[in-house]
Length: 188
Length: 188
Image 1 (cartoon, rainbow over the protein chains, first blue to last red):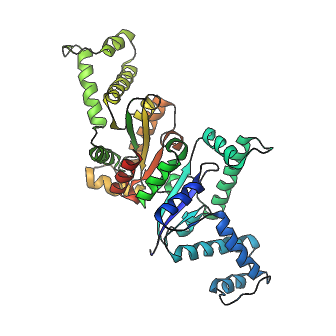
Image 2: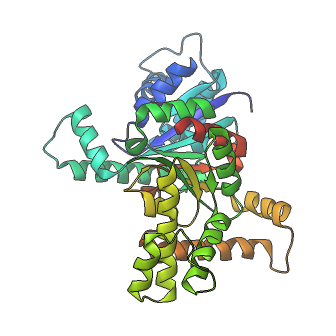
Image 3: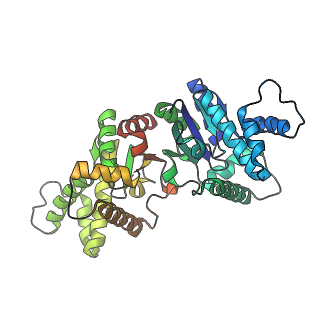
């Protein structure tokens, strides 16, 4: 129970990543989102694939993982768990997505957050933030939510967004992003 | 959209009423819980039943309601709605339970809160607060939750505890009552 971690799960278009970054900035701690974690995983995978030299920092888990001979999907999940555990072990931080709430719950003092919002508010936001695409907005939201729910269920066995697995859930559309940030900083 | 109201729905044994009272105290505004609202309704019902004189304060709604000739259950619900609307119209306040989130949502600037907790934490709490009874603790929790859910669904048509109808949901067992109070005061 060394470090204090805020994990943020979020519906697509709810602004959960923005909230994560702002809370982290406010608290003066790092925020790791999907892009950051995938970049770290990609580096590690290049080491696995022999495309990159192991260098002077061949962390223990590389050897352990290669010894396992699992499917690439399982290996990728285990690698992600280990990357997230390494990040959490470094110090207090915010981690957005990637089932971090499940991975870290028993190992650190986690504040497990779920950010959600109405379809209307999220539809408006994804068009503002990501622009229009050929796919209708509502379909984009539903597809992405479904894939996040399926991913979460596959690896954790839990229902995504089930309040049993969160400490606090906030409606970012009703409250506004800044009020969510303030309240989370207070809860931390 | 005159007043700012915090409405608190809560699972039995989650400490939602205590949180409501503490937030109200912290903010210097009144808190109305089930007992307070039922006491007001009982006064009004005595007037209806002719057991009490109308006195000098025969509020408009008494006349409107008696003119309707509805079932006593419907009348009781309408009376409750009007009592809650009257309380909310008086000024900023906290209202615990009684579907206040549904009743006031479109009429005031409401912060709609749902307080929940694990069965284990709630079981521990109800024994501490209300003592043991002949009914097994888990049964008491489930019966009370079911009756709250049924009541909420009957009058609002919404699922009790569905996050769509709340702005923030907090796990009082994981966060502790005081942290919930702090965060809600901040959100208000």
